[in-house]
Length: 538
Image 1 (cartoon, rainbow, N blue to C red):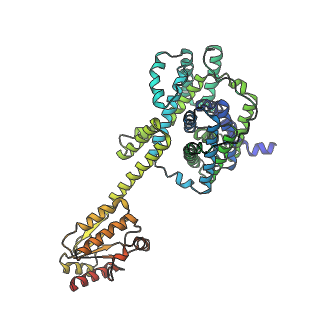
Image 2: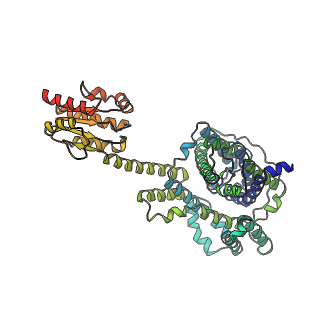
Image 3: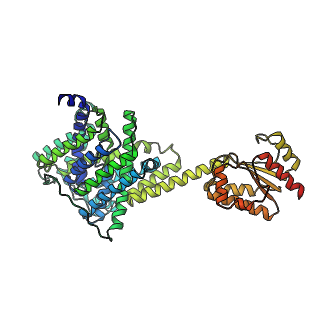
């Protein structure tokens, strides 16, 4: 036993420290989700243990997180408080994460652009703050969407419950102003929950509390879904699975950067999926990799996945033996803790760069933030990704057009060999060489086509594709329009230097079938010689 403790001392201490941080947050997130404090604890236990054992990141600590809690709260609200159906969503979300991992989609989940992630996370932070203001002011949270909760805020501010308000402000102050030297030893959330609960018991007994928390093991419940429920369940499960995957993989990247290790993203998704399926089957809320708990775990000396499992076992002991003490925690205390959590989730570093950041990226970020807060999370991600993708395509199209060049003779910078320049000069402008560098995609297809067709005063157009590694269908069809348009004027297009991927695209789209003998050349010199022959025959 002594040898085991010596060998895994860092993991044991890391798990203990992470559990101390996780306990108040699990209680707070469980209450905030609408499923109850016990659901938050069991989510932390099951996701934390199984993701540590089966996941692909050795140092990661998993459990309920702010973003996942917001989604759970919205799901439970949309389902009319039907917890059985909400836990079925968690089970389906876990199953989807396992599918993501087995399909090796881990590397693609990380491709969501930073402005979208920034707007999404900032929106989540805003929602957490809005959801906790009611408890912080001593009121029951109003029903409805975020906009309705904001509409009810002036009335709550006008008539606050002063006991709850003082408790909330006190705990918020503890979260903000705890000295760093103390915070490195005892986590501020634990200090806030202990001192806030004592203040509630002895100074503000009228403040609303969590209430009785059942102890013992949860009851296994297999989800029973009707066909009518499936569209709703799958829609919310996709949101949970997508958010949980991004949350976990981003935390894995943070852990990699701190420990100088590399995680297995696909295995991590499988581990998170197993954890969330178990949480849903036993009445726990969904979880993901938790950045703060992971960093605490690493700094405490953790070196293996044992620390994450040990953190879950400590929380299990709390549930089995200390649920009665947790029932006296005032809701305003949890609100004070979560207000700081919500503030920290907002991407303040990016917001501070908004004045100097590219305008398009800033627009994407704010649109994603607004849709996250006022519409829904899946729509926010979808719209943000589409906007960011279109912005990227537009920028790439500009870069691609900068590589396009029209040459009629031995011009400076044309890069023509003496034999090629001689043919062009002798043609007197009747032969034009069109050169482009880089991939040709739908983003620049129309502009390239227009540029080719605008080159007037020629009988032959040589299109040099030697520097084009890839061409998509849109670009191929735009090139076909140029070929047909010039043929109708009794002019000729000659393609040269095609790489195999480009040739394959042109063959599969039927563009090469539009060309006759002599209109495809291996080199630019051969293409110019063919163009000269065409002019001579004409």
